[in-house]
Amino acid sequence: MQASRATLELIPSAGPGAGLDACSIPLVGEPVSEATAAGLAQVFKALGDPVRIRLLSLIGAHQGGEVCVCDLTTAFDLTQPTISHHLKVLRSAGIIDSERRGTWVYYRLVPAALDRVAAVLSRPPS
Amino acid sequence: MQASRATLELIPSAGPGAGLDACSIPLVGEPVSEATAAGLAQVFKALGDPVRIRLLSLIGAHQGGEVCVCDLTTAFDLTQPTISHHLKVLRSAGIIDSERRGTWVYYRLVPAALDRVAAVLSRPPS
DNA sequence: CGCCTTCATCGATAGATGTCTATCCAGCTG
DNA sequence: CAGCTGGATAGACATCTATCGATGAAGGCG
Image (cartoon, rainbow over all chains, first blue to last red; front, side, top):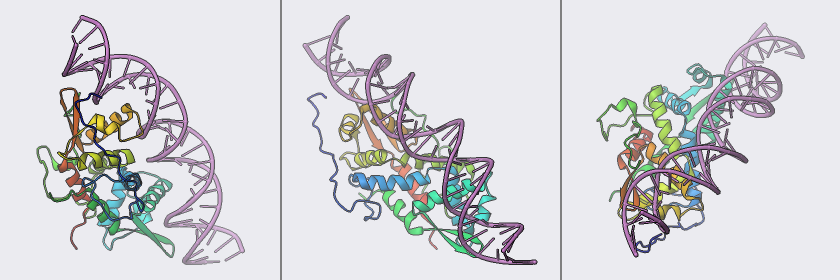
C-alpha cells in the first residue's frame, strides 16, 4: 500500500448480543458485527431462491394469510419433498411459521421477520 | 472492466428507464411472476453471505459513501481475490457501483437498489 | 523504459445447495 | 385393526459457490 493513503480503522467491535434478534441496526448506518452479518446472511440466503420467493408470495397473497402445503405443491413443477425442503428453509430462517390442523399443515408469514429485514435495508435519514 | 454496465435489471416488471420508482412491487400483496421471483432471488442471493453483508455495511458506513478496495481487503481475514469476487457479486446484483480514480478503485452503494428491495419486503398497510 | 502497487481474472478444489426417489410418520376413515 | 392420504425425512447426485494461489491488466513513479 502506498504511503499517501491513511489507513482507516474498520474492524467492527465484536460486541456481545450480536445477532438478528438484536435491535435492527441499519445496515448502512454503521459496521455490523460478524455475528450480526451471519444472522442477516442466513435470512437473505433463505430469500435467495426463486421458488422460495414465489412460496412467500403465494403465502402472503392468499386470503386469510394461510396456505395449505397441498396448495403450494400444485403451484410448482416440483416434487412434494422439494417444496417441503424449501418450506423448511424458510421456516428455519424464521420467515414463515406452520401449524398442523388435522390432516393438513398450514403455513403463514411471520410479518415481524420481514419487517425487520426491511428495516435493516432502509438507510437512515441523513 | 470496472463499473461495468452489465448489471441485471433488478425487477424485470419495472421496465427500462423506470428508475427508482417508489411504488413497491408487493411480495406479500399478490403472487409474483417467475421472472420477478428470479430477479429478486438473485439480489437476495447476493445479500446471502456474511462477508458481503459486512462489505455493504463497511461501504455504507464510511464517511463520504466511498471506500477503497484496499481498505476493504484489510478488514477481513481473506485474500484479495476473494474480496474482489464478493464485490463483483454485489456489483452484478446492482447493489454497489465502482469507479476507478487513478490507482485505486472506489466502491459505493446504490441506494435505489436497496430501497427497492426494502420496499418489496414491506407489507402493505392493512 | 522498467519496476512497483492495486485490483481483476483464471483455474482448481472442498463444501454447500437444489432436486430427485424412496421411505417414514401422523392423522383420518372404513 | 388395516388402509389411505398429506407431509416430512433420508440418502444420492449434479450443480453451484466460496476460497485459494497464480497470473494478468491498468496506472503511477523513477
